[in-house]
Amino acid sequence: MAKFLAYMLAMKTTNIGELKDHLSKFISLVEQGEAVEICKRNVPIAMLVPHGPKKTGNCTQLGCGLGTVEVKGDLTEPMIPEESWDMLKK
Image (cartoon, rainbow, N blue to C red; front, side, top):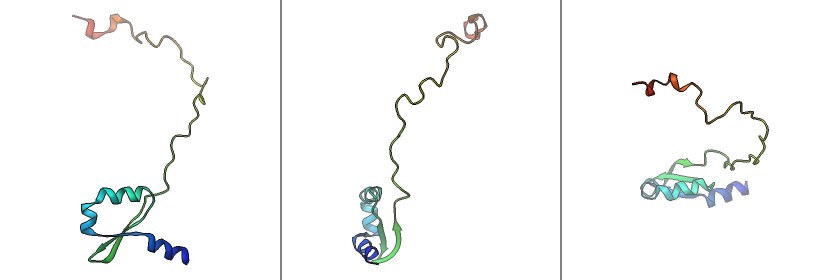
């Protein structure tokens, strides 16, 4: 119960007018993991909370797919012969 009370006391509270004027500030607070209580004439009506757990960066190790791809043929050569290209015909 004490944790919940401390959470509610530390939570940011704002009225709609202030939210509209400083929306980017409140969005950045929510991105940092804080919840923002939105009030209409000092009466709580909504809560702005983070969507989910903060996503971490890409954890892929460099070189983890080494040797898993086999290239057959020359990648710089065209797949069809030049005689078949419509753009070269006059």
